[in-house]
Image (cartoon, rainbow, N blue to C red; front, side, top):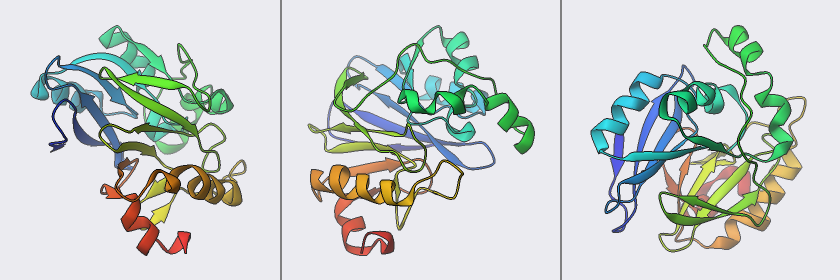
Length: 217
């Protein structure tokens, strides 16, 4: 687990889970300790250990999209923690309804999941007591969403944008042009100072990616 010391009031920790080394993130308020689990794809023992280690009280599970490495453990963790699942966009419903089938193909334990609520463009998500704007950014998956907190200039990116790369679009439902359009028209205009936690790999900033990401040139 890696922990980031963000501005006062909001902290984050990353737990790589599943064979895909997906970044399951914990976000919590350092005063209230209220928090959320972002994209619990699996390895629930490691996630629960991290929750105890940082001392947060999980209030909800939030999903950026419906792929197995992000959502495969969500239903079981919901039952363990007694919390609700929010997101992603309803366009990923078909993925969440086939997680068990995906799991058998990849050798990963997973359960189908129906979120308690969905997100749409322009919604506001409350995560760890802080407000995040919701951007619907399809392309990697039809229902991928990105969460933006303006106060801390922090983005929960899912698999939309990575350090030096972008989300895969070679799935039957993938759309490279739609993904690039979403990044260029919704994400990059937020400004170079915004840092983001991606679904895989190291964190970065929009400024770094605007300058050096080969997919955005």
